[in-house]
Image (tube, rainbow, N blue to C red; front, side, top):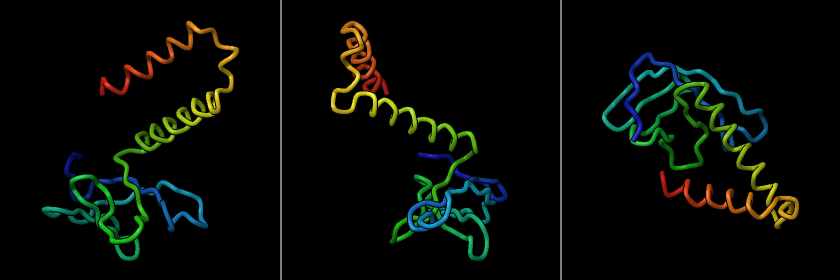
Length: 120
């Protein structure tokens, strides 16, 4: 569960889904304008969007158009995490590149991958 934002606090919105279809994804700072019991609201006018307090996901019956981050750094960290994961996936996709890696190193990688998820 995420923390409860306060009115006037700046959060960062990334356009996703259909909102990012023909435009670049841009991290936009928006102010919290309302905080209720279940939801909070970011922005004003046409930019206004409502989010659930429990998970900070946009409150909509359709595809969300915003993804919220507390700081610019949290967005950058998530983006870097995705890039690293993608590089690891590509390196071992279809068993490629495993011939050049010694078996001892492959065992170390396997141990890191099997231990890490259970420690979360």
